[in-house]
Length: 573
Image 1 (spheres, rainbow, N blue to C red):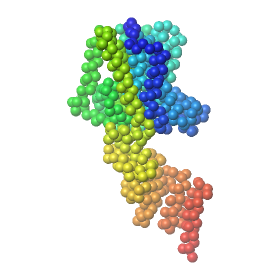
Image 2: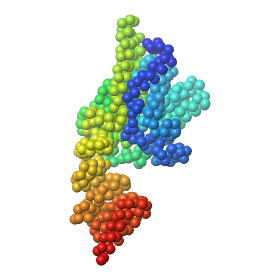
Image 3: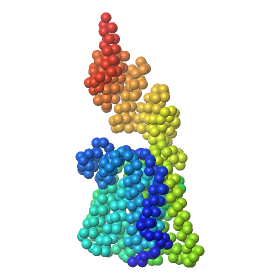
Image 4: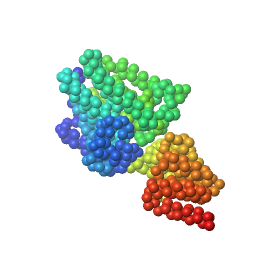
């Protein structure tokens, strides 16, 4: 078994923990007062789920939450009871979990007698690739699941020594809690096998693998459940996911190298990366999986001298397996990589780098060389903290995030559309919003919601006629979206009603809107007004009556009914 290696930092450990926590707070300070981002509102417990019956639905109703992560959403449920909709509370919770995970990285290194434990903790805590997981409230699933996973790992190491049922059960329960928070932790049993191999040089089927078989079983079941939810309930299906097995292999190679590169050189980090075009006929595409195999072979050859690099590489790549491209996850619609996908995997690299630094210290001549290495480590930690501070500033609000995304990736149609929606709500922002919606459509012509958003913006700036083709495109491209399609039909009808030559078309669209939104009084009102203009007064009065039934005291409907009745009686005389 590897012998403990004393780190070069000699402060008392409680002081180190306080320094680490303070460094995390300082590095993430710009994001602490940040607002909700992208899908945060779908994760923070909504009104209908805030009672005790909501907690029951979180656990037992598939689809009650955006993803079936009952432990995660139970945590959000509890947090909502503690501080309601105060966004800072959620940021502090995620930040605290990240700092706790970093301390658990330290404990894990110490338990495994890996040198540079606190260096590993600081590297993980302050590395900018983790900003997306810590500053984005939705990714509390990452920070909380890593805490459970590391606790499960530590409990397993205790079981490995004691071989008691009690310690096995504790480790198993912690692993189950990790799975219930995020299923990327399903890779933990394989990581434990790698750690066992690293420590002993071999793996015993009976001693090492058999106790992990229940872990593998619930991990596979959890992963399959998540894959089904991603495809059938979240929307990880369609043209963007129509990839051949060969393309998926090529994606896996490039994904792994992307994460390795961004960990080693965290420049150009962005919320949404460009989505690669994977063409097997391009020789350069094959370089990534070839290099991955080459590196693995080189580390395998090196195992007789040291097993550590190969073990770290296997854990890193194995933890990334769920997001390599073999399984469909919704964010692949925008890009095959995202910083939050490597949060768990980055632990292995942080530990390897820290151990490597200690190895260099021990090989260096005492005096100047060791002093230089120590100061270089301090400079590295500070530099990472500064980069994290800068990156965290991009997450202080949604508009800042999307503008920062477009500065690095101007072809992000998602960022263009979402930024357009944000600025369209600001005074004087419609013209800029139109530019962003048009950019989104240029980059992704089949983006139904961008067409719809552009139509709304054009109508609001007085270009109603130009808006109609975009509403029609939204209906054609996403016919199964009841809310958007119903609204689009209503808006088309509201525009066409002013053209006498297309009044029948307006009536047809309004009737379709009413079919999709039968309980909306405004639809009945507008349809009634168009029918009245067409001289179909009895039908118009019926629609006004429906509007008043749905919304008693609806003044506009009452006045419209009176005008229609008066007009009808006037024609009768």
